Length: 120
Image (cartoon, rainbow, N blue to C red; front, side, top):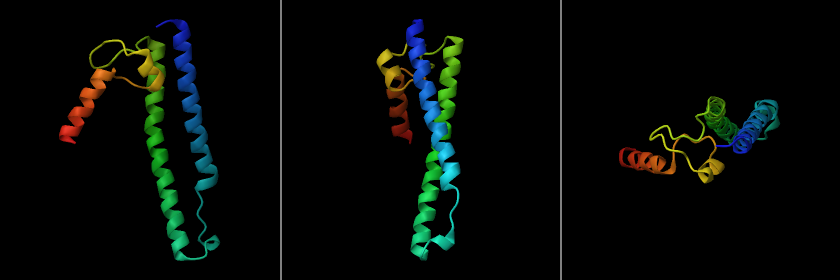
């Protein structure tokens, strides 16, 4: 992988990381409080609690995604970015453009998904 491609992927990963952090900060600033006095009835309160819970679950998933992004940046730094962790082959640029945080080539990912489906 050449320096221009590395920079492109680093910029892409950094942009994804910034967006996740921005949404997390927005959640902390705006969605953390739930005032029962502002809601007219129990149904509104229940609905608001559900939406708040849903938002927190999304942020939990984003935390895992943020960790994957950080590991991809570390792989860029170490020179192992774009190499499949399963088979050791190069991951195609198209796949990396779609999922720069990926650790598996398309063939190994399909194999993994097949196993998960069979045993999942």
